[in-house]
Structures are given as C-alpha cells and as structure tokens.
Length: 169
Image 1: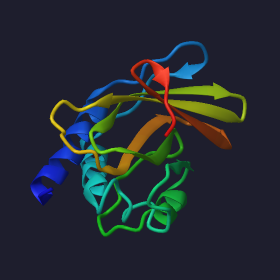
Image 2 (image 1 turned 45 degrees about the vertical axis):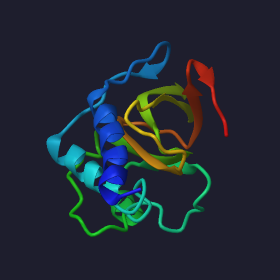
Image 3 (image 1 turned 90 degrees about the vertical axis):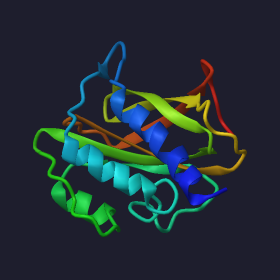
C-alpha cells in the first residue's frame, strides 16, 4: 500500500472523529472543548508512524490496544508526549485530556465516544465504523483523544462497539 493511501486511511477517520460531538446518557460528560490548535496537533500526532505510536506510545506492543492516558496537568502532558511538535495549550485547571490507541483493522475508525463516570472510575465507549474508502485488511493503531470537563477519575475501562454490538478482537 502506498504512503498516500495509508495517510488517507488515517486522516479521514480522524477528521470524522474530530467533527463528531460526544453524546451520552445518565451520568455522562457530553461536552467537549474544541480548539483548532489542539485539533491540528492531534492530526499531526495521528500521522506519526501509525496511529500516534511515535508521539504517545513508543514502547507499547504493536498488536494490542493501548490503555488510555488520563492527563490532568501540563506536566503529565509533557511526560506523555515523545514527538517533536510544540504541545498545544490546554487549561488543565478546567479540563482533562484522555488519549488512547486501538489496534483495529485499518478500515475502522472511531466515529463517536461516550464517557460514563462511575465514582473514581469511568467507562469510555468507542463506537467504530468501517470506512467505505478503505480496501485493506491490515491492522494498525487508531489514535483517539478527547478533552472533557475536569475529571477526578483513576481508571478508564474501554469498550469497543461495532455495528451496534460490543466488539473485541
């Protein structure tokens, strides 16, 4: 597969992810801040190697999901980032940044996210879609991220859904 095609497979899903709002029910956080600087930064980070592996997860296994990072300070953000770009400014006194990566077929992308809090824990539901433009059966890491109102959670459990059903490889 040529590099241009691979780049398109990463960029298109990421752009769709950034355009989608967060929707939930019950004790959910359904608001997110968006900022052009932050979106541009994560677009670049998503293209670093495959699915942001150079930027945020350089030492993780190649064939598994990567547990999300809960970032509540500039110090945490700088510690988590291994890339070369300048980090965007996020007001961590008001917001929490969550970053993770899924190991999924290359034609899948995260269409929607839903964060449900349960005390000091949370569940992050990721709803996957299949791109109609992809024609490969390769697997890669799909970087996902979200900025939420300040959270004081310790653990995030990630659930993936595809075609309306919980999905695990």
